[in-house]
Image (tube, helix red, strand yellow):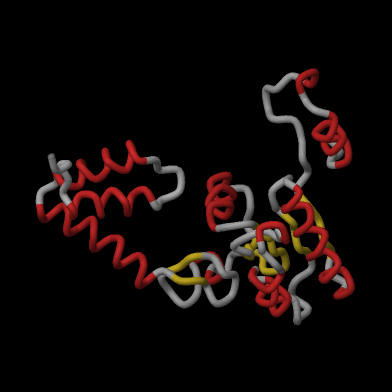
Length: 200
């Protein structure tokens, strides 16, 4: 007896399965939800994907995602252009912007050095960062990268390239989360909390 299948539905499920963190069951649930949409809603959904794919690209200055030539952050004259905060990807920019505390600029690498995974310096947006440092405007570069082996390696690599230019290189202080008990913090976190302490 032939097994029941609908080729178009299977293809749709397969496409959802290709998304990160989406297993077969979730992919099937999303596919069935799409099928339950009105045709006009499905068209809007498809159009939004196509429009985003066609219009969104990297800002020519900071490599953040934008649908203009230059992103709104780089365009903002009120931003402190003397400080660049280097981040892993666009989601980090969003996280910083939500704090409403940072009023300088960013540079998005779109990855971290990881020779084991084949991610080498030429695959990151490092040359674009160095090009921004070829004037006297930038005074400080903040390494706001993940506290992982890859993040540490990337920060060290960039630091060695930037320091000879006479530009101050800093990193985020790693500390104790607000409300956490010191006794449950690991040694590395405690050590970095001390190293990154500020005067009150």
